[in-house]
Image (tube, rainbow, N blue to C red):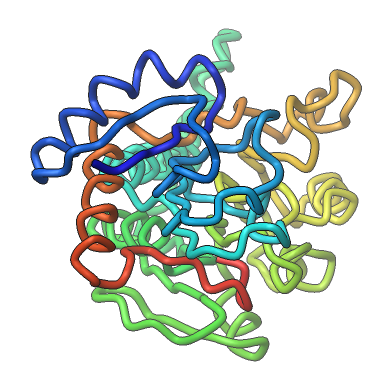
Length: 309
């Protein structure tokens, strides 16, 4: 019998309890689940950032911490967390992100806002370019970035992808490293940010990199708020270098009421809803990782502490 601590915001537990029990049982795993188990008896921790668990040192026999979120920036630097850590790569999360990104890129590409919000009696017959004339760059070639890039490529967009280390993704021209970043961004008409939040990715879109984009480019950020230098973005919006920014994530959330993004006519703010972990599919990932660890196999999606994701 394994002891599995569920350490997440309180409103998660009623949703996850039954689903997680069933997923573990389907793997033949007998487990005691709870939100308040003796630390010295815990074998696994299912974790999402919460106010209750900050110190992992009492969990002396814990084999792994299994994250419910794709992002681990709130936990990866915790020095008391010495056991293996896995992040969530969930099919439902990937599907949701692909749908959100595709929808917003198409909205911007087809310039739909002009017609949706321009019902003022003015006939505007301007036709947008075809997708093949509007190159897209996706920053981040992990599971989410690759899925979004391939969906856009299937619609006819020329897609380039960038990551810290080179990854081959079918249908996407990929680049890596500092020199590759400039090449990937040069003349991009749409930029989608799906990088993790690490010291190396902070302000990856700044005055210098924004200047590489095609004049009037669109920026879509469902990744992490610190990926964008906000002052540089606002300046690029004001100058017309960036035509529109659709932003789902921010350095401070909720986005403060007085933040310039709220009132800027060329910014769309969405409240961190691009995608989220789906309980029904994420529990199968958790159960699979417990089963793998018990069988002596490596964790799926284990975090590289040196890289931060």
